[in-house]
Image 1 (cartoon, rainbow, N blue to C red):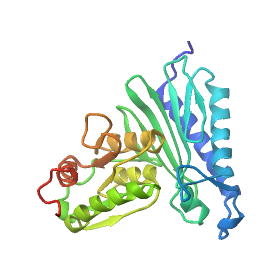
Image 2 (image 1 turned 30 degrees about the horizontal axis):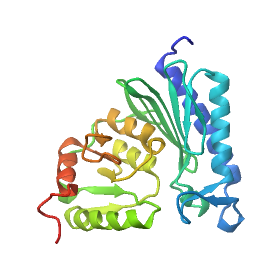
Image 3 (image 1 turned 180 degrees about the vertical axis):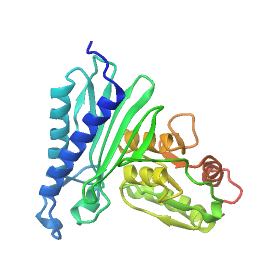
Amino acid sequence: MLNTPPSAELRDLAHRLAVAAGEELLARQPGLSIDAADVETKTSSSDPVSAADRASEKLIADGLTEARPGDGLLGEEGAARPSTTGFTWVIDPLDGTVNYLYGRLDWCVSIAVEDEAGALVGVVHQPRTGITWSAIRGEGAWRDDVVLGLPREVELAAALVSTGFSYLPERRTEQADHLRRVLPAVRDLRRGGSAALDLCSVADGTADAYYEHVIQPWDIAAGALIAREAGAQTISGPGTALPNGVLAAAPSLAAALVELLAPSNPRRPV
């Protein structure tokens, strides 16, 4: 077994690879012509994966293999390897592919490393702005070099809430029902297109909450840790109100949103 490095060393490795992957993605971004991109689809015709996604994941996976050959890998685009060290890296090489292909800002690289207790380190890097969010379990969260504090407590009616939508039409129908309940009850709603960035927005106070009912582990591994370490409550996984999704907010707001989103909620429209 490899010697266990300090958590800060793992964070520095994740940060270095996220920045390098971001530079690769910027060099490949198709600009204003989405048709110029080498794009295929995954779960549906509206769920794209590009050559840039795969190149970014390869860069990250190769870097991790060189630095930490015994660690496990779990990547959105297929990187997979069992761990012999107790550490597994969870990689979203391009979160927000649609935004990326359209030349928008809201896309990022997300890298987390997990141990038997869950996410230990998380890094989310937004190449178009140069902003990096990071966290170490039990030690706090940062936006670049600024320490992130507790999220503000707001009433549900004053909350700015982010969400995301599935690429599958049948799930979007369910999400429309959730939206009918949430939108009249909150200040406003945002749909950015990157779960990792939405979680970081809760961490740094540029949104009050984020929820999504169906999500993948690589979408939230880093961002959820960053939100938690900034003081937000995160709800995700089996046995919770969002067994296949995620919710992040200040504790009192999280409770109000869970009540609103629960199927038995009496405020649900008929």
